[in-house]
Amino acid sequence: MRTLLILLLSCSVLLAQGKKVPAKIFELSPPGQAGLAELPGLIEAAMGRFYTMDLPPPVHRLSDLAFLPPDRKERLDLYVQHGRDLKVRQPGVLFIHGGGFTGGDKAEYRSSSVSADLARAGYVVVSCNYALGPKSDPVVWPRNIADCRAAVRWMRANADLLGLDAGRIAVAGGSAGGYLALMVGLSDDRTGPGGDPASRHSAKVSAVIDMYGVTDFSKHGRGEVPGVPSERQKDYLPVHQAGAGDPPVLILHGTADTTVALEQSEVMARALAAAGVDHELVVVEGAPHTFDLHPKGASWRRTGVVGGRPVASSSTTADIAEATLDFLARTIGRPAR
View 1 (cartoon, one colour):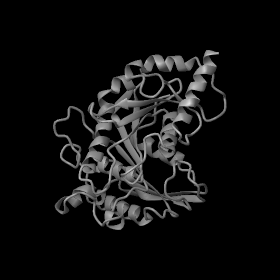
View 2 (cartoon, one colour):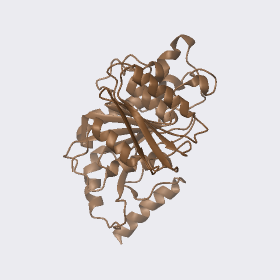
View 3 (cartoon, rainbow, N blue to C red):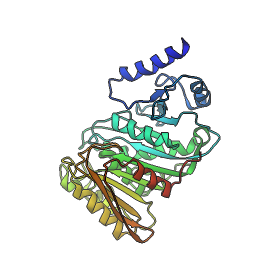
View 4 (cartoon, rainbow, N blue to C red):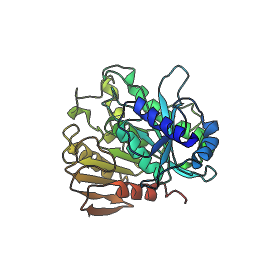
């Protein structure tokens, strides 16, 4: 009876959110009612619950954790592999949702699907919210970038509780989140937009995954980054932030994207190449805007430069989960089994 009640609670929480969610994600606790200190006990309790043997295996989520100052309402979610041993340090990934900088949520379908896939593979995964608002609102930039940097810092500050290897963190995001992931990865975490020179913890990352992100605002909306003074525009454009020493970047984009042109990712790839940054561009044939690691489409092709050498490969299916996990394995390592 107790097990049935727990499973019903998990389902009711997801239904109450009114969102489409991937299968096999179970809440460790009602959102906002447990903290990181309770994580070991929650994981242990989850091990005793009944789960079907259907694939994929379950992933657990601890939702609505605070990571910003007390006056901020934005929260983040933590995803953990079923049976996770917190004593084993694992690499981590921060995922940043999209929504045109004005909407979206950390637990929307794409965010939860990608986060669950990565957590199933053994990574410590966090999905965060950030400041939203009218694009012309001067408060939105650079607070949105600063919030995402704060999520990376939160991961490092809590590495012991998370079972995280703080030296191996990647950032990923889709659409607007792709832009934010690039800014976190390519611009300086202390002196760049949203940087914090006084922070005790670094917001630097070891890899970036950009899923069809906005990279050139001259082709998206007003022709400039909204709310940013003209003299600082280049500071807020990822194509101008690529430089020697930046972490490797994986770019994912579909040919049927009518929201953010594929050309933006191609220009970003060329900027990374010119700067000598390892990068890979995976173009998914027939994929639209807003997809997870299992997009609709026919196939994909990969080009780029890794370790100074051109790389190229292709697939007869559109699924990009394996290619994404391979990229993470090469950059931040595979989770220990």
